Image 1 (cartoon, helix red, strand yellow):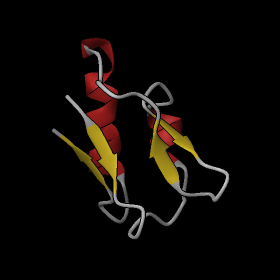
Image 2 (image 1 turned 90 degrees about the horizontal axis):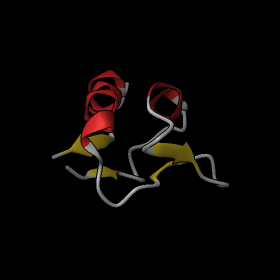
Image 3 (image 1 turned 135 degrees about the vertical axis):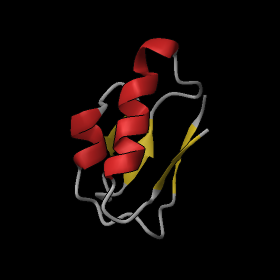
Image 4 (image 1 turned 180 degrees about the vertical axis):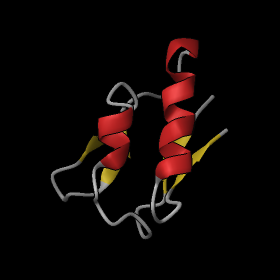
Length: 62
């Protein structure tokens, strides 16, 4: 699995980082970014939760 963040849509709320810090972090510009190229199985559930919980649907996991 891989994750992407639509940087134009992200509002910088930080929810993804709080739900799944192994995959997401807030950049210096307060926009979320993916910090791992491939999501390991142990982190798949939290990455999908971050996708589902994102208030502006800026996260895509596939």
